[in-house]
Image 1: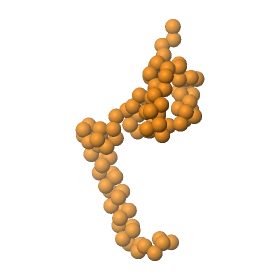
Image 2: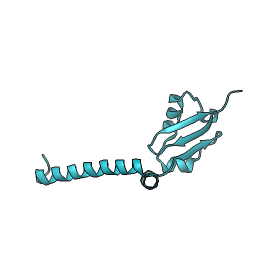
Image 3: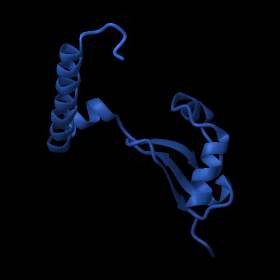
Image 4: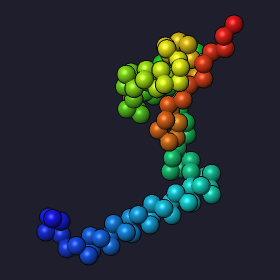
Length: 100
């Protein structure tokens, strides 16, 4: 079942990994500097229409995923968004242009 790896050491390593993840999550919650180091900053995917394809590719966001995220926020086309951002947590958020 474990591919020849002893069960107890494998389980112990998994528990240590879960504890380290939890500690890192708590530390990034308390420290803005550490959060910036671990999670990075939000990146602008589009501003007033044109998509920054270099940023989009860096975050492995396809055009279809971008279009889906915009539709889920009620925006039909990237040209209708004032700002589209790839957030630190991996979510794409959009601010629609003001309607006149």
